[in-house]
Image (cartoon, rainbow, N blue to C red; front, side):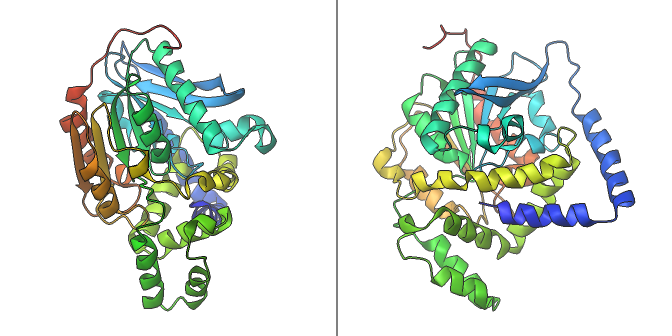
Amino acid sequence: MIATIAATSAAVLLAAPAAGVLGHRALKRSRNASLMKIDTPNGIDEQGFVRIGGIEQWISVRGENLANPVVLELHGGPGASTAIFGPRTRSWEKHFTIVRWDMRGTLKTLGRSGPEGQGEMTFDRIYADAIEVTDHIRTRLAVDKIVLLAHSYGSAFGLRLAREFPERYSAYVGTDQNIHDAGRDDSVHQALLTRLRATGKRKELAAVEALHPDEQRWTARERAMHAKLLATSDPLTLDTMKKVVMGSLWFSPLHSLRELERFVTGMTLSEQITHATAGSDDWADGTKFALPFFIVQGEKDVLTSPELARRFFDDVQAPVKGFALIEDCSHFAAFRRPERFLELLLAHVRPLVTREPAVAAGA
């Protein structure tokens, strides 16, 4: 959904004067590598490839204390790895064991076997992968349940997992929450048209006005174009994309210059996945959840409407639930203001989740 923005930002970074820019990058990456060191007695810092769904997929497990609750992140995009945010979210690892997974078609998993080795690139295939990753982590860390933290498009997977497998997850946390309502609410689309008209972007406006009124009939490229314009037409979102997303990738000690290009390639490859949810209806799928349920949204998010997320949340039935807005944030709110997001997790989620004995594999 944000591949074009990422490509533009990456091109600017790579075209800059090599000596100064690369020297600054090397220094910042070195500092970030030091920041990310985990040397506590009961800590864990593992990154590597695990065979999931028939291919090698990259999984990172990091935390300062294995007695802490385990959090499995589902990244958005699709194809936008959250592992790039490691230094920004380092404080999360003091209170949780954070599991980050590059889905098929994404960054390090994509680099392992190339586009031709990613297998079936569908929503259903990645959903099955997510179940397998969940059980791999439960077995590896000897826990019965884990917190499911779903970002952006990853929340389309997350809602379904939380509905279907409450026995595997101790809580659900959605951020930049995608809510699908079979196209009934078009407020995000109308707001985009208003911004384009106000800024005089006639070419972009014409492209959006030419889209079929029924979003379900858009192609993957049209959905990606629409998402790109949602972000680039909003100064706060564009600033976040450049500084927080691409800045994090540029200075990540885990990622090479080659992976700048791979990040963009993966997002483009993954665009096809969104077709499966174009006509989805989360209300029809069910608003009853048998686990604690939380949504944290950027108050100024122009991609995933806070108002629509709130309407869905209000209809949710769950043992415990909570909704919060992060001030002065659009999309990627958890990464623009990671300390505020952590405050919310510590106040509302961590008290509810505890480590429990492992269950038998495949349960």
